[in-house]
Length: 333
Ligand SMILES: NC(=O)c1ccc[n+]([C@@H]2O[C@H](COP(=O)([O-])OP(=O)(O)OC[C@H]3O[C@@H](n4cnc5c(N)ncnc54)[C@H](O)[C@@H]3O)[C@@H](O)[C@H]2O)c1
Image (cartoon, rainbow, N blue to C red; front, side, top):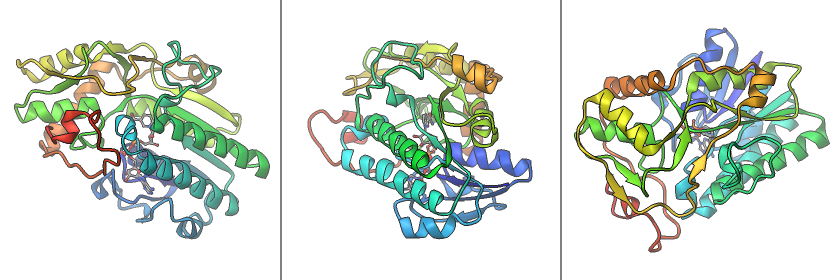
């Protein structure tokens, strides 16, 4: 079995690669290294520093591959409001490039990592049969890529599945990126004895998933023959907490007693975002194996081990208007 993973230097892609290497599968993958880190890439894989948007190169490197997991993306939901061209180009055109190269090279199956941003602000918990209504360019780009995957695979008789993860946390996630990954950002700031920032009143709710609880689901979506043409939410539906509660958990764990700083809420940020895991329980045998508190501890341990880092502002803001959060405009993190 030869598995090809895009975004293999990223958080999810590198954890998935490690999982398959342990099983002695052949693993290849590509990354343009804008988001992840070369440190995440296991030496045992065939690594290509290739951008998914480079269609000719993608055709060259997806050779003799059985299945493809497309995890590369710009996944900064908030930032996508201000850099829509960059997000649409990478997440839509880049995805079509991967799907086309994979189909041309006769892979058996393609799995696309979408996002719960596809659902938008509809009623919670989000179910797979709901009509999606994304509210920002990131969510729209993910949904567009899903539609393209379904269309291309149906036309060419290729198997596919769509994973819908939400707020994944765990080791190997970037914690010096000011635009996303709230648990990692807060941990990095606390380790520097700096006050974390909360957007809005902090009462927005999220459900965090441990990366290990996503990986075995993606494995089934990639390799289980009985699961085909499915869109499935992956992750827990029982760990629904506010950002204020998350902050308290981190303060307790890290014995930090400064209050958070509250900043204006960000445009288009959905108040409550919780996915139903019912379909995953039924089809994938989903069960949360890592408790939220333990998962957060894993993040804290990882960042402590690596050491705190300065934040890196390496994405361009295309529409630098008054509604860009001050944190990003003035590089406050
Ligand atoms: N982490 C989460 O909470 C979460 C939640 C829902 C969905 N997802 C989706 O899961 C996937 C993986 O997310 P992640 O958290 O690991 O993000 P990540 O940023 O850690 O990893 C993505 C990787 O893709 C690479 N990349 C981006 N554009 C590329 C391109 N054009 N060509 C080659 N490489 C490119 C980046 O350098 C990065 O290493 C993404 O598609 C994301 O939208 C993640």
